[in-house]
Image 1 (tube, rainbow, N blue to C red):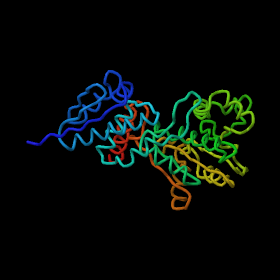
Image 2: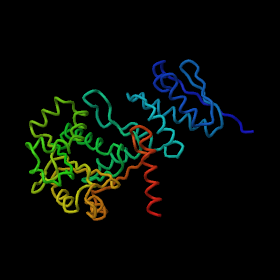
Image 3: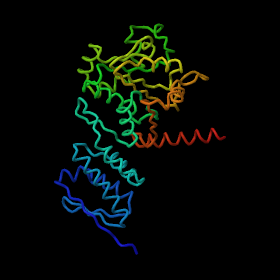
Image 4: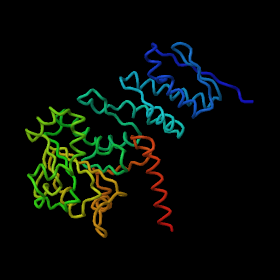
Length: 324
């Protein structure tokens, strides 16, 4: 019979206990379902008993969540699930650093930070490189985090402006044939970028930056022939560029600038037979110092947990179809 072990964790007050354990012990319930241990609350203290291995892991989960809360962050059920998964996989050495990485605070006071180790690695790559490719499925935060890093760089005077662009595939980039002025033509294609900027900056600051041309949101076709100095430049939906468009974009980079290229190579909307500029670029520029490519996957999805499961199911279906 295995000998049981016990570890205790003390909270500073009742509010701290509620934050970590969750309303109606929601977080505690999640943890109990994943480990063969018992957690008993005694006032502002918890006692963890069970096998030595499980007690150690549960203690580490609570320690990380407590650290997160004491750093001023809310503790969500996603944080609990991710902490559990990371510690079970033996990758906890990354967790502490990842949870502490605050990018910035939005206009509404919400803190933006990586919610997965993959996101943490992605942010670090953006900091360390001139050009970063963020590749992964929907919901992994690749575009939103890039916009957050752009705003951070602008506020810290690392760059003088932010430029966001994406290919207007449905219009074939022939925007002159669309009705209305430039703004009316490109708005439908650039809406996700606007939404991210609105959320991070707030409407008033966003409008002020736009009017002063500190922020520019434009379709990829309008990048041709320009050299972009002292800018943080984001190309979104890059899987829908042609190799020629991607080469054009990459060669727009000027002095004092940083680029982030995001895309999902499983969601290419180009006409059948056309090569993706994103796929080509990764092959061509990989190995160049100052350029990095970070791959996010279903474990980095921070939308509803079902989104990650759906993405994984489709990946398995595609593998079966390819073999068949």
